[in-house]
Image (cartoon, rainbow, N blue to C red):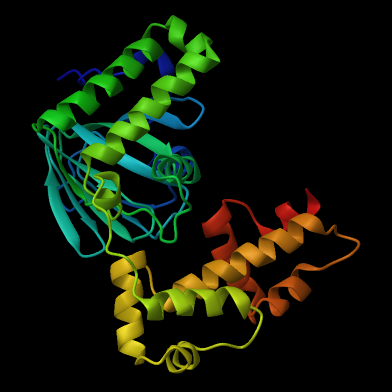
Length: 326
């Protein structure tokens, strides 16, 4: 039986019967993962087409048989899987869905993932650079994000909003398949990718949906405002949440609930972000000859250099060393 044709045929990336090659090449294009043949696999022949744009990418993939995939949090990009045929069982964190042609999934890069592709399944996958999508979200909100963007896993593709988003995906796909004029015009491509990101953020429920929907949070109580001021003023000092709660005259749990309700974060995360911003400002102002990353990290309360580098990259999309040398 001939293999079903895949979208983006003019942008073939590879086809192989070697599982190690498939794992490496799909991992390079999307996210590092482990790939194994399923218990009932009758064959294996991976085909993958795809192309990238400035901030997004489109791929089509078919494994030709049952496979299982596991991936740790990969951090780099959001993936929207749009089944063309068959079914795929997807688990991300605590969420589980069965992806089918009428029900896709949005995979956030901050959780571990497992997937079981059943025989006959093929997907179109839209990828979004994490840092670009979060920056775009910040632009829509008019403020910096204090928490990573996280989407709900399941995506009902029959909803009107989802159908509208799919029409934008389809336009981008057709432009790629025909080497369309939009792709040769940077401004037009920027606008199209921006529309694709905006519509995804408005279509798929996520932890910033209330803010995007215009739901205004209640005014933060005086204790939360005072705690924010203390965090800003004393970021270099060895503060604890207990210290701040005592200083503003409330209990720790009351302060935590206030930050969660009014700022969509925790006191600890807020202090960490303040310290990261101060560290980034210092690294930007200094040069490799006048400061070291370890000195700056310690000055702003980060004892473990490896952990500092990890959270710094998650926050700003580059390493401390890249900021310092630039």
